[in-house]
Every structure is written in structure tokens, then in C-alpha cells.
Image (cartoon, rainbow, N blue to C red; front, side, top):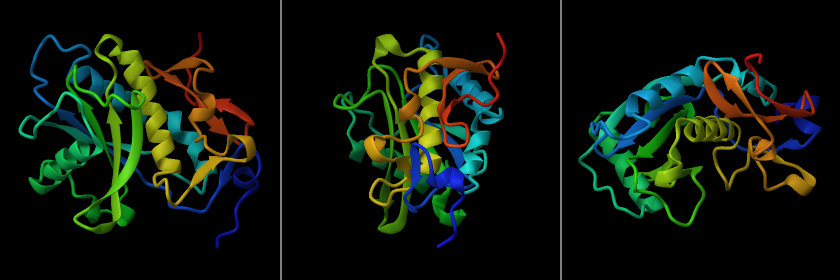
Length: 235
């Protein structure tokens, strides 16, 4: 096994040697009819938030964790053809992502080394998973492919769907997907009393900052022994 640096073996985050996404790419999938002009924030505003965060220095501190590079923006598509239920289950998320791969509207993860593309699914308002928080990430097998698909789901309650909530959730889940994409085969997670936490969980509700015009929370840096928001604007 590759020798680990002090920054990844000491501190609140521990390298549990599982897979990571060293060159992650973020593909947005807008689920439902996003042409409705009353939807706020709009598809275009969400796309801009993703582009702004991903083009900033926000993810630069991930390189201390086995040299993870800053993830990049890979584009967006809208899927109106796959059924969008009011109460969404994981099988529904997997179905719509699979449909987008099958019809060629999004890149097939199998064309990348280690499948390093993250599909971020964003449904229209009033459609969400009831029994979880507002956003989460996980992976699942697609057509029995052992590498699996790395997915991020976002679905705030309708009254809390603001661009600030979304930008915080987007940054949070991407940081954790890069460092710990597979639950059963752990990458970087908390050590000792924080073992169930990932790098952004440790900094949740501990302050926000403005990065390239977008509101984000920090993530844990072993090097700094603190929550960090790289690229944070002054003021």
C-alpha cells in the first residue's frame, strides 16, 4: 500500500484506504420540467452556482488527501421523460440516471478511469425523499458493473429551496464524494469519536463564506487542524 503522509494519518480525518475520486467530474441532471419560469432558483442559476464553485479554489485543499485534484464541471442536461414521483426512492434516482446514460444525454461513467464522474440529480420543487436530509451521496451498481455509479441527490423542502441552501449542499456533497464515494469501502472519514463523519460533516453549521460569489460551508483539513474555506472572499 502507498505510504500515507502525516496529514492523512493524523487529525480528525483518517485514510481508511478505500476508493477516492482523484479526478472527479460533476454532471448535473435536472429532473422534471425546468422550463417553468416560476421555479426559483432557476436551472440557469443553479448551473452558474456549480460552475462558480468548481472553478474556484474551494476544493484545492483536497489534495492533502491522497492528491485529490479539484473536480471539474462537466455540463448539465434536463430529463422530462423519466417518471418523477412525489416521494422519491433510491430506485427512482437510479432509474433516471440510468436512463440518461442509456440515451446518451450524459457521459457513460465506464468511459472514465475508475468511473470518476458524479451525477448530481436535482428534481423540480415538491418532489423529494421524505426520510433523509436535504442532500446525500451514494453509489450503486449499474448493469452489474462493479465500479458502480457515483450519485448525488439534492431535494430540499419546497419552502427551503434557496440558492444559498443549494450551493452549500452542492459543495458539501462534492467534497465528500471525492474523498469517500463508497460507504462499504471507506475512503476518508472521521477517526475516533468522529468516525461516522466525513470531511464536510465535521464543519456543518460552523460558519459560511463567500467563494466566487457563492455561499459555502467549510470542510475539515488535517493540515490546518481546522475547517477551511479555500478561496474565501474577504469581508
